[in-house]
Image 1 (cartoon, rainbow, N blue to C red):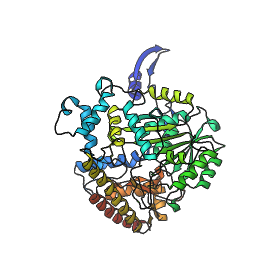
Image 2: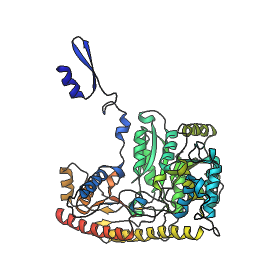
Image 3: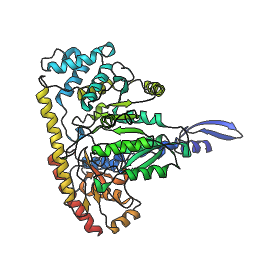
Image 4: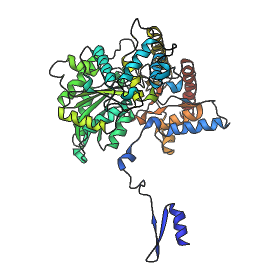
Length: 505
């Protein structure tokens, strides 16, 4: 009887053994107490508790539970197609042909330039199939196309040998971070400088690798620029805790939507040289620039144009198929160009990615279309440009509308959404609301966002999930929903905010 109770209580597989008259029970090898502590430290705000609750509310709506709204608007994550963006025709045509070449290469409904690109990719795949493994760095002709794209973009040559394809940009970011780790604890562990606010991938990966996050605050009063005195403050204070190894820059910015000026980029490069830091340029939103006077400048281009004193610095830059005008998140396509690595380290980098075999070859094919789109005079060019310009034109309108609406509401201020896909407004919360949040055991901005979800059906992410100056409160929202739905969302938001303030003022 005692053994049966033990079996039921533990839920384990009990092996009844007569050892001093007692039963011995086999328990789980892994428990929350003995698992990797660094994994437990990881957090990922854009898929956190609010998003879980959003899913529960959607299920309640399906079951007929009455709410003040009929649907949940998910503005928490940059998933373009999930909120209705139409795919780019040419991109899907090339991937479809690569997937089913026996039928579609001879299908008259598919244009010749799509067939030519698909055939070129297939010719470089083992067995002429995207179902085969590629080289660990990616299909050779795709890396050649990426190198040509970078060369045309920057006016400086790129080498396919310096490029590897990855499962989204996230995977290549983790690959480079892994190389930077010291495998030591305490003040000898690697320190990575990250912007605050930042994309939670960075804090999650730093926690997973047992590194030290060196947060530097972006200047909200100056359109979220990188403030060099702030960079110097951050690294000086961190030196007693770690060995600073790299600086991450997200441009255009996530969650802040800024586009760095060329001058600001030069200042960051000079700082990185002075402090002997590896540059990590997250440039996945390079197609997403909307504001007048703003322009994308790649870190590589600026680095090369600053002259011999700077253009031998180590730099990794990252690109993705998930953003831009494509929004093809599910294909998980990405690449990294890493320049000026020590040759011996380059060997280790290739060894590291070879352990993962290769990234999704269908995702690689999507990336090839991004860097090798239809050219003027080709059959698909006119439709491609029409679709691309429509997506980016809509995003520009939405960026302007969101900025204007937030700034029209008392107690909210929002920098111009210059690029990317997000706004990061600053909200002034009444003291009574802050106290109510504390009583509920929640951070004030999370308290605000949970009520926004429950009362208006709008799912956004609290600023505390990205980091923010102490005593300030923000949230991140995407600008991705269709224009009519986003307009309705902003109207609902305005009503909610006024009611919230009146409730707690």
